[in-house]
Length: 194
Image (tube, rainbow, N blue to C red):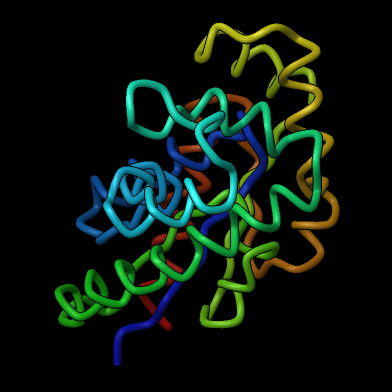
């Protein structure tokens, strides 16, 4: 029976880096956030988005992620409405992916909001990737060309590293690449014994 490992962490923590390291060891990884972005452009999602948010969430007839982010990140009710549209569609997509990867001893589901979405309930074990807040802010400012205040706003909408770590089975502290790689090597050994 394939074990499902959840991988989470706040914006800029380096969860994608850890996921890539696991993939390099042959572990199938499902990137929930990336898939959610693709699902946004499916006919079903577009119809639901238009019904919920109207034309202000679209540019030239397609969903505009920046506009949607502006709508939801300062409005908890709008964020909940967006999640109610996207999460069920991601769940269906994930189940199809999982069926294709059922031969693997374990697979990883990478998601920023693993706990918030309830996806953690399906996981056998959970890995949390953390890094100092200032490091995370710097990474996201460089990666996404965002202002510091915008990054801080996103961080404030997510669980803290402490909250995630308390609910996780494994914690990777991602500050130094070589150290992170060593932690992932040990983690891989542990997961291989499940």
